Length: 224
Image 1 (cartoon, rainbow, N blue to C red):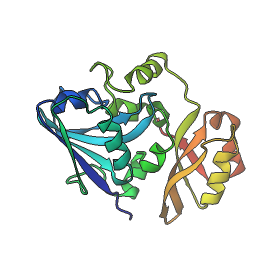
Image 2 (image 1 turned 180 degrees about the vertical axis):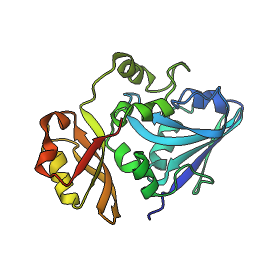
Image 3 (image 1 turned 90 degrees about the vertical axis):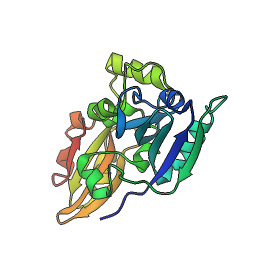
Image 4 (image 1 turned 120 degrees about the horizontal axis):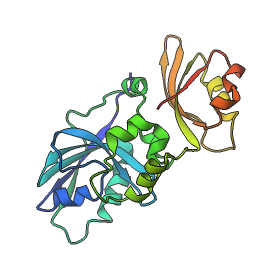
């Protein structure tokens, strides 16, 4: 079992909540003392990272995958202009919502390797978007394009999938066999008694092409 590593970004000051409200996808005007999933997006609506946010008023914490804390910190500081909010970093996270790769792969949750592909939230499924994004809170960085995708029911070219089977090589070959060359393939995996359990990316035409018949022992299902 491999442990997931988190770090904490702390936000303190009179403007901490209003600053974050304009930067993250979750609505901070609701009670977030126990925490909630949120996204930090680029201006083009692609994901910098998913994060666990908790706090209230002048004191907030953003728990971020350790591999992405530098990118998250830099992205947030670009917008930290003329506001009473101080950001500090701590190289640990208390009571993080996910602790192991086995757990997150079983739950179908993307992590740093998936977010490094610069994909839009809707690639990772409706449930992922629903738990992380508020479409009623008003503007936040990246909101316009993400809101447009949601309103139009956009069909994303890439799909987030769960994969199981005896051979990762066969699974990679299978995912890469459909669609234009791009992001297809296994992104993260853990070993099991049957072989492996993994998450990955497939092109949207994968399921229409009966690709699974090429490797009948590899199970591929879209995470919706």
